Structure formats: structure tokens, C-alpha cells
Length: 198
Length: 426
Image 1 (cartoon, chains in turn yellow, red):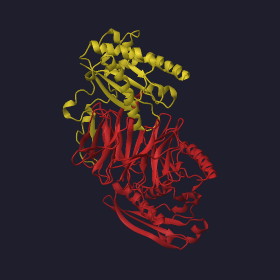
Image 2 (cartoon, rainbow over the protein chains, first blue to last red):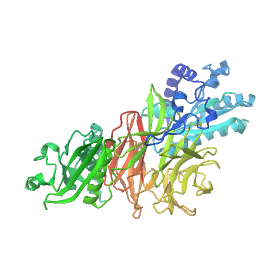
Image 3 (tube, chains in turn blue, brown):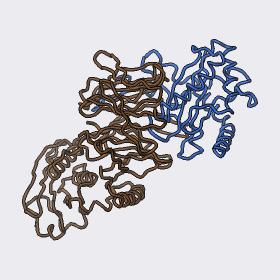
Image 4 (cartoon, each protein chain N blue to C red):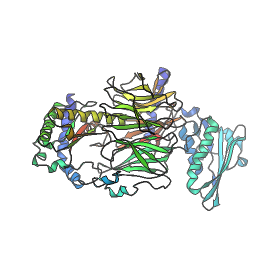
């Protein structure tokens, strides 16, 4: 347990170091994917086998495959979101193996976001739950959702409205770190707090 | 399985995994000595674009039922029964010999013929002549493998079947795109069924092999789609708040079992595809997910962590009493039945290792078949002789096939990206 926490702290500090470049890449694709709403099948294409025509067969090229799901909208909300000394600059909550319990270190982070949301009731966020790669994929979807729900219930306890919170679980499908070691697993057991564009 | 046998088996698994990672070819290992010795003589060929006898040889080798003779060890390369000196092959311990030829019939057409010969009786067991377009030559080769397999084992071959799987292209430490693909059972002729920059998951074939259900996050939320493969047309059948996951087609093709968390914790539901009505099968406060039907459609197995750790449970597909099936190991998940309903294959976790295991339904005995560290998503071949699963080494995900006794293991080769979640077409 103790060792794990130390490792986690290390992993998080590594994360902070690489945060700048992360932000740059995300900014580049801020608008990506938001333009296809009308078609009803945004950001995906299908094809028929045997050279049949799939619906939306051409859309794949138009949707800009940048692989980043979330424009980092939060960084545009104010300087407090980019100030490393402000808990609002931390938008990832990490978890222990097989657990959806929020660790004490992250309580202030969640509280800071909750306060901001209470003060800005028109702001919505998505809590994206994630899991490490171990075990089966659909079970990990369920684990990721449990984690996102833990964060949501803490925020609600502090007065955040249900209407401000969306939850999605990606399970192990969107790893923050590739690799099959403890360091990568720790970075992947997480909930990302994603501010939605207003 | 006695202790000694188990120990021997585990020892074998270690050897197997070592060798199967060494190179991307078929690894014939110890334990296959009881397999039938078969020789496939290179077919006489007038510049066909596909080496049919090589495809047949690889198919038969992959099945684990046969011990294939190396080409260099053959006393000659006969291409018809008339050219065979049976004594030579008897001396070399071969039971069966396959000979054949591929003749260019012009206009992109080929005439393919083969004979399966009984070396000891000196006679023909099978003989076929078939026409094939240039594009269909691989399919014809797999068809020949099916005919030979069925003649020699009494079981239907699965070589001309198809598999579905998900691939992801990772570049610069980021996911670039996800594809749902369908390919021949040996990994050739991959075709993209759906592509998205958001994750795609959990492909499930309809029992007639014409449609596929899968999960897509393309709208930044989970939804289940049903797609007709021939046309690419599809409809969104579930997009409730929360999890929409793990679709599994009922054997009669009319319903999907799936996981929804719209009412709180993830539970198992059955969706009637004709009228979109939903029936809830489980009601625990824990995680219930990964439903899969028994071949007769009467029962559904699923994963639940209501006992603290994920284990396999079963419930009638009409709903009712839920019962726990697995008690050994601290992680059992993603179960599915063998086509004959007598076994259940699952992911079996122990410490940091997740492997493919098979459980005998009547005795509940569990045998671990693979030796990887993160083996997952097992899928039975339609003839029940092999299990396809996803494995991982370092950052590379790939597909492997293992025979039911664990003796034969093969890694399927794909040219790019991470490959996972294989589903063998019915």
C-alpha cells in the first residue's frame, strides 16, 4: 500500500512534467470532431464487405483523426486552471488497483472543482472513468464507471447539480500511458475531469 | 486431470509460450506426437497467384490434429495418385497424403484438383475438382482444408470461416484510429467494417453471420450498433445513460443480451430486436456484465463481482434464480459456451496473470490453456476445436489460437497496430 502510494506520487509528478506538451497537442485539436453532429453518425464510418458501399464511407477522412477526445477547454477558462499551485490545474484523479475509492490526496482537487461548478452553474463537465489493462474489457468499463460515479457523488455532496455532470467510462480503451507495467497501470486507473465548452 | 498430468501440462505451457513468442510461425510442440501424420505434397501449379498447398498445409498444422511433413523430407512431389509410390510414404511413417494441381483455365479462372490418399491402403479417400477465380483461390484452399479435416476427424472444419476483431493504430503515444475488421480465419483479407477515432468494442456476430453488433464511443458516449455486413448499413439499438456494453446475440437471432447501467449499477438485460422491448435479468448492486448465451438459448452466463471479486454466474434467459458457477481463482470473467454447450471458456486471473481457461460444465473442473500475462477475449471456433484469444507482449496486442487441449498454439500475424477482441464467425 505504502509503496504503491510512493509510486503513484512519482507517476503523478512525471505527469505534471509532461503536462505542457500534452496541453499543446490537445489545443491543436480543440475543434476536432465537433462539426459532424448533423450527420447523426459523427466521427465514424462504416463499409460494406465485398466492395459494397457503406454509409458515410467518406466521413473518415473528413473527421480529422487526431485521437484526442477532449479539447482541453478548461485551460481557457482562467489562469487558475493553469496555475500548478491551484488544485483546479489538476484534472485527473487516480485510484488504487481494483478500487473506486477516492484517495485522500485527491479530495482537495475534487472539492476545488466542485466549488468552481457551484459558483458557475452553467458550466458542465464530463467525468471520464478509466481502468488499467488488466482483466476483461467490459468488466473494466464497469470499473471505470464506478470510479467516475465516486467522483460525481463527492461533487454532488458539495452542491454540484446533476445537470452539470456527465459520466462516461472508457474502461481500458483510452490509456493515458501505454505499456504493461505498474507505472503505466497507475497512470491509467483514473478519472479525467473534462470541462465542456459552453 | 491428475496432479502429474497437470504439472506436465503446465510445464508444456511454459515451453509453448516461450516458443510461440520466438517467431511468427506455427509452433508444433511436444504432445502433438499423437497427432495424425499427414503430408501435403506441393501442388503442381501453372503460376497461380496463391500457393494452395501451402495454405492447406498451414491450416491443417494450425488445427493441432495433424503432424505435417516438412516439404524437404518428402521422397518426391507427386501431383496425382497415379504418381504416388505408397511404399515410400509408408516407410516415412505417413498415414495420409494430399496431392493436387492448379491449372490456369484462362480468363482469370483456375481449375483446382486434389486427392486425399490413404497411404497404408494405397487408395483415395477424397477427390475433388473445382473451379476458382483468381480472387477466390485462398478461399478454395481453405475449403479443401475443411474437406480434408472433416474426412479425417469427423468434425466440420473451420478454416473457411471468418473472424472479426478490433485494431487500433497508435502513433506518437496516442491512439489515432480504431477499426472493426473482418478477415479470413487465418488473418488474411482483412476488411474494415467500421472505423472511428473513438474506441470500438465487443463485436458479436449474428448467428447467420450476416450482421454484427458492437459498441462504439463515436458520439463520446457508449452506444450499441447493429450493422449489416454486406451493405454497411446499421442502426443504433441502445444508447441509454451510462454503460451500453457487451452485446451478445441470442442463438435464434432475435435478441441481444447486453449490459446497461441506466438504473444504477451495471445489470444484464435482454433486448428484443423486433420491438425494442427490454427485459432486465439481474438486479444486484454489484457489477454484472459480459452476458453470453448457452447454445440452446435457455441460459445466460455473465460476470458479476457481487461476491467481492469477479466470478461467473448463470441465469435463465427468461430471468429467475442466479447461480454462481466458478469458485476457484480470484478473477473469472468474460465467459462463453462451447458450441456443444459442454464447456465454458473464460478469462482466469491469478495475481498479475490473466489466462484463458476452460471449465467443464458438468464437473466444474477448470483447466488453464494459455501461459500469457494478459490473455483475454476468448472465442470458440464454430466447430469447437480451437479458441481464438487476444494476447499482449510489451505494447503489442496480437491474436493467438489454442487447441482445446492447450497443445497447439499459434500466433496470427497482422501487419500493423494493436489487435484485440477476436470473435469467430458462427
